[in-house]
Length: 638
Image (cartoon, rainbow, N blue to C red; front, side, top):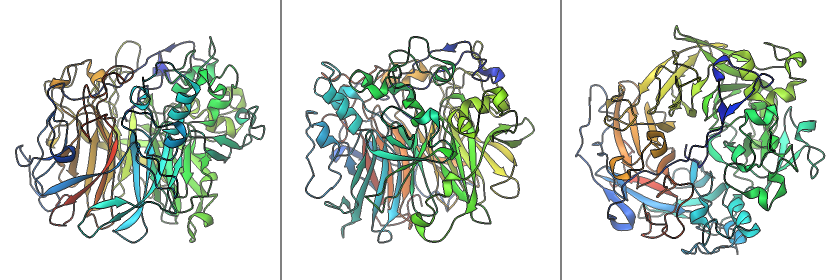
């Protein structure tokens, strides 16, 4: 997933040290560079283009019934490109009013909207997204994440003359949007305004803390001596959806928001906390992000947050039983006896893949009937063995060395320090586990975006699950638990190794059957046997600032049965493609375009915001949600 800063990592993580054994960290700040060319801008109507049939469609054996479109070629256009016979509509941009009755401020192209206005508008950098039907396939709610802010775009003058007002606006541009949408008679979609469901959740929205860490001494602050009410959510990346109809938003790289002490303690060091933070500068005007003043505040972030989109008055809940991590997403499935199983990846180099199995079965009656279901259960971390088998190692106090003698006084400390617990039990350190999805045959898929540190210096070398050193292009791994989703062992294999020939520092070739791609990130299996893959190739990963030589990021469709892969969509310059869901009839697909125009610098240049991209309005670039439909009204991808 895209973000300004990734978490810091251990200088020698190969031995899975505990936090009591860490002596130093390699302090790395990866500035996510934009993609695309700095050539003269190209604009089709409303910034969209439809070019089809120009690229090879790859092998078609057995896949024609599922993948019925001509591949879109790679390009560097400042436009969204979809196959012939499709159209893409911009639905919901950063700064658009969310739709709260009587409070619908207009977007100001010069970035002069206030923090109070931003609280009622779409946040920045759309990411995970889900469609909740209200009236089947034609009317529903979209819940979506707003991952982080580019303060060079968000404010007049960018981060110059940094102030409390700018911090407040940045905090208001984080979080989650819930909007109502409907399809009109002409097939176009619109945001319903006003709507009784419209809601923005930000970095200052009150949230319950629940589960084993709630009320623990490590969760208490001077403003919340109960340790049970947190303020806000940040760095919301991918997501999940529960069988009882709630939305799970996942807090990823929260460490970059906090200023640490001159010498971080061992727990802080394992999270890459450092003096000065990683660039957001919130602590300069909001002391709860300064750990020298509020040392426990950072323990209240890094959780999976549950939201009821149908109840705008409900308070979000941080589910601590699922463990604290740089959560990328949360894929929820059910066992045969209806217990919930949540698969989660942690998007950082050499971190882990987890699953949580609920104690109780899902009950009929929706969100209210299952309001505590994710508070009770068992957390596991994955170990991938060289023989194509694997095991889920239980992270429970008193088991597998997770005892007071080894630094874990109780189970609350295990879920607060889930990384350290996983270090202790010897789980497999992965190449940035990102989105996770499941197919109809019980396989679970996870994108491993890249890890150019694999096998470099004192970092861990290759292993069976992560077989490439200097892994700049990533791969997709999959597994199937033995017996049922609560199985303690699993079988695994690589679905595809990514690669694009002739990119600097990149592998010359992956093994995709069909179209090449790199750095898989977003992922969704649609239930028909089609796996939708979204990419996030970063100029910083490739060590390049030459936008003209790097293809724009894309979304591809893979036939799970045959392995055939075709490129379905290419985004505008400097963007990441992330977030994918469709209406139940698969005739309307929602896709997010994140950070168009992002550069390799720390922040977008406020004096030249259109240097890389001016999508979608031929002006200041804005993240946005697309709706993709077939012109003939048919099913997407056929």
